[in-house]
Length: 377
Image 1 (cartoon, rainbow, N blue to C red):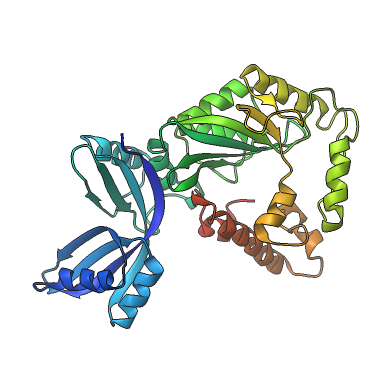
Image 2 (image 1 turned 180 degrees about the vertical axis):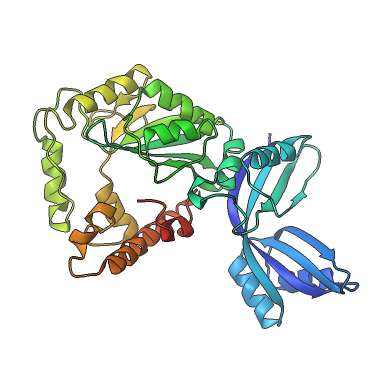
């Protein structure tokens, strides 16, 4: 069975003259430079102009070639979905996109035989969404929910608050033949559960419901990535097989290794996150996700894993010291700067992190525009 994968990619719409051979001439120009075209749509206009939409594997190289040839073109973002070439597959994607209120500007498709792989490319006009951008369901997320690689792995990350009344962030990623895709991002457990039931993400909505039982979170993950198997739940919170009453040996080891780089760990107590950490561990254990410890085989899954993201972020970004990325600490980071300067600096950090993450994930349901509008904090 053909794989079903959805990714964001760039497309070029080339302005041409409506005459015989125009399309062939354009494609030959790209072929000479070894640029592979994944999809194409062309049409003529009554005024004698023609437009050719091209989705290719090396958009930067294609732009250089077209500029050198004196061609006029416009670059835009599209969503490409590959899936089994059979009746109803394209309809299933566009139906869900339509129900989510996403207005498709244009679409085109390719196929490769009855049992081969088909490709659907579609775009929605910029600025056409109704309501605030943060309330709009990402068309890529909808396509990803329909896609995914059958039998692939999935990982759930939880940025857990140490007290129940604070929000905990959620991120779900699954595997495809092109790498890893971020299927869902949510600012709270409540938002994650609602998103799995087709509700849009509101990044500014407040939630005080805390982290619910593992069976509900697992069911939501399965709805969001139905073709994947959740194997690892990574939680940013001190976890242990025994009650946590004070600073642990692991806390000391990490602090010694990364303390001089601004990444020493906080000291856990019986109350923060003590009882909450135990409840989370026991809840996931009932679903078959046992806490991974020093004696656990690295390949043993499913597993619940304690993580500490700060050292990983240093490695990802190639930095020597802890990044200044927390919104609530912006005044502490830059005490002498104006409010506007602090906002600009922290959004630059967020964009830099997102840029590096895009090198790992082929799809992330978050745009630079969300950061610029401060829809996330």
